[in-house]
Image 1: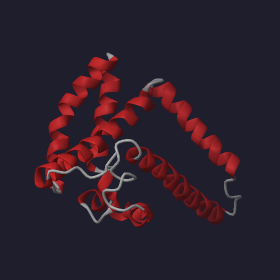
Image 2: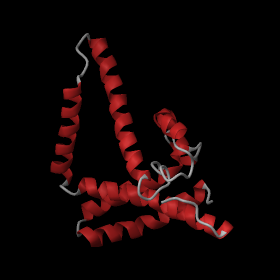
Image 3: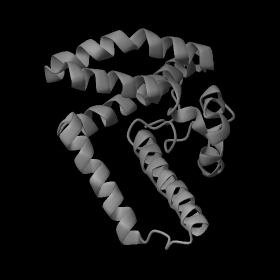
Length: 177
C-alpha cells in the first residue's frame, strides 16, 4: 500500500492531465479549473484515508474533529471509504451534514450572544438553497458536476493506487468496489 507521500505525488502528477481532460470534455477553462481544484482537494484533503490517522486526516488541523465520527464508523480500506462507487459520495454527504451541523451550532451560539432567536430548519434549508442558486449563477449550471467529478477522480486515483500496490505485493485485489 503506497504511503501518503506517494499518493500526494500521484495527485500532483495527475493535476495537469486532469485539467486538459476536463477542458477537452467541457470546452470550458472555468469548468476545467473547478474540476482540477476539486481533484487536488479530493486527493490531498478529502480522500479515502480520512478513516485513519493519516496525512489527509492531520491536514484538517484544528478541524479534524469534523472527521472523527467518520473515522470511527468506517473501517479502513472498506468499500464504504475506499470504494469507487460509494466512497466519495459518502464523504460528500457526510461533510455536507457535518458542515450544516457545525454552522447550526455556530449560528445558535451567535444568536444566544445577541439575545436573538436561533435559526430554524426552514432558514437552514433556505440558506442551502440560496447557496446553490448563487453557485449556479456565479459559476454556471455545470459547476457542481465539475466539482463532484474532480472530488471523485481525486479519491479514485488514491483507491486505484492502493489496488495496484496491493496487487503488486500480493497478487490479489481486495474488495474496493
